[in-house]
Image (cartoon, rainbow, N blue to C red):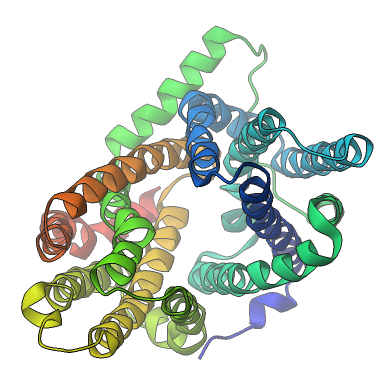
Length: 424
């Protein structure tokens, strides 16, 4: 079972409270914006393009944000970014109140601006938890973060649907503006050790020097390189499977209903919520590299099993879709557990290995790689599902993951990893 001792730590509790409030507001706004855009335009393509366009600022600004995150005081940075978000969203609420609508262009602009603030917030936030939490408590800290994220990801759509029906997009914008301000106020009272290292002169030369220093640290550390490499491959596979593949299989291959898609999403979210609560105690007893590799190894085999139960050789044995759907649901529930364990392990390993002084730059590089990998995987899997039955592309995803785990396993299972952790 999960221990909640960390919540007695004032700094960590304030940080998690701020994260919970802002996460709830953001998820509610994203859900409500999708309803608003569909109601106004009737086009799912427009909303999909809004999500896609948010990738552009991340591709352009991630290297800059990473350096800035290491340069400037992290507490001041995260408080400032949350306040900027509060003012920005509040301004949109005022704009909607005065004009009675949000244009498609204005929503595009809002999505881009919020993505920009998120990039700089994330770069500054990367080293906050490792700075305020002891090394031996990092796994528990990441478990609590995962649990909070899962809880509010589940709750937000329901609350958003109710509030949107009562107040429309105006009420959602007001609530999200308040949530970010509340988060900023919470963060003001956090004591964060200063590991930032701002140069005497902020110019292109100092930016280039510090950026290349971060790249150099990544190159020298075999573990950091492998964390980023494995993370990209996993995002390529799992991002595509969860966002495109499984929904397509349930809806098109199994002829599933909207209710079944809702059940699937709830079960998957519940497994991710349940994992830190039930298994964090066991997981802390396992060497973190082993936990991560073995978890992803099991996930790759389970993905192959999903391919088998979604293939014609299995589904055509049943008159309805109940048995194939239940088999898929059971596999996904187990996958959710092991993916959550592996992600917590990966995050904890990253927090342990990477020097706090360059964590902004390193996390930005990893985030950039994953940002690129996810849409590529979605496109490849989407095209494959259109061209052949799901059995083959899904099994191939499982094989790719399995090969990646086998390739990277030596680094994470090697006892020398612990020596590198201690040296960093």
